[in-house]
Structure formats: C-alpha cells, structure tokens
Amino acid sequence: MSNIKCIIVEDEPLAVKVLSDYISQVPFLELQETFKDAILATDWLRHNNTDLIFLDIHLPKLKGMAFLKTLTHPPSVIITTAYHQYAVEGFNLNVTDYLLKPFEFERFLIAVNKVKTAQTEKEKTNESEVKDFIFLNAERKKVKILFSEIVYIESQREYIRIVTTKREYISKMSTHEMEELLPANLFKRIHRSFIISVKKIESYTAEMVEVNGVPIPIGRGYRDVIENL
Image (cartoon, rainbow, N blue to C red; front, top):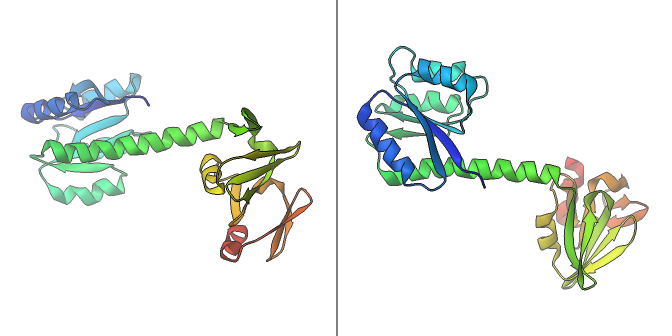
C-alpha cells in the first residue's frame, strides 16, 4: 500500500501550518509542496504528480474552483474553506470531501481516510485485472489454478469441487470463501452450491445453464444473475 502524496494550495499561512501539522501526524500522508496560489500549483503540476490536493476556494489570482476545472486528470481533492455554500459545486466537480475552517484533526482524518479507501479500492481493482490465477490448498499442497481454466465450482458440504478444463480439485473451503477470491466480472454464483465461469456458458434456460457441456441448475434466488449478463 503506497503512501498518499499531497500538496496544499492555500494563501493563509495559519491554515497552511495547521494542515502541515495534521499531515505530519498521519503515517500514510506525505506532503510534497505548499503553494500560496493556484498559478504556482498549476506550474508545478505540469512536471510533477500528486495523489491529493488540499485546496482553498478563496485564492488570489485564480479561484480554487476555476483551478480545478483546468486540471485534465485531477487527483483526489479535499476542499478547505470558510464558506459551506461551495460544497455543492465541489461535489459536482468530484471532490472527495470539504473541510470547513476551522477544522479539527478528527474531521481532517475522516476526509483523508475517504481518499485512502478510494485508493485502496483502485489498487485492488488493478491487481485483480493483472492476476489471472489463484493458489488453493488441494491434495496437501498449494495448487495454481488459472481463472481461464475454471469451468465451475460446486459446494460439497465443507469442501468445494473445482472443475477445470483439465481436471478437478477438491479443496477444504466454502463456496462463499472461494467467491471472495474470484474476480466478480468473470464468475457468478447461480445457485447456493454452484459458481460458474461466465466465459464458459454455452446456453441457458430459466432453470439451468450449460457450461462446457455440463448442465448446472439455477437457484430460485439467482435467476436475475443470468438475465443481467
């Protein structure tokens, strides 16, 4: 999990000091630079990347919101302002949060945690796009199973049977635990006891799905899963 790099764009020295203090108390935040106006920040952003901007609305020269609109790929933004009427406009510009001055450390922490959560989600998504296999305990060893080869998974009490295009594996875990490990876009649960590979579907009716020539029943509560595909 990488640190969140941030900059402060703020013309009040006291607010800069408070923000810098708060940032230094949060282990996952790393302050890169502070700017007293948006023109200087714009210039710096041409050659540098950041993950998060603490942005005051009332800036000299170029106002905060106007500055935001100039960014083609804006990072996360937390607005700092003494005026709450800007919140609405901020949310239209996809701002993560806004802090009303004077703000307490606790409120600051809530805002940066939102950024952290969003970043973690993003990293997870990137990982699952890259990873195309899992290692599972089967036959007293860790076996590598490619997502592309899994046809379906069947629950057998406290075990699951993983059927791939090459062979079958039995592993001691629940279908629920297995479902957590599989990319949701490639695998769907269609029955309390069955998870199937979307790519292996050959045909389906309201009652069953055929994957690689094997008919799998659709559970009553799962009919819309197939329809939604």
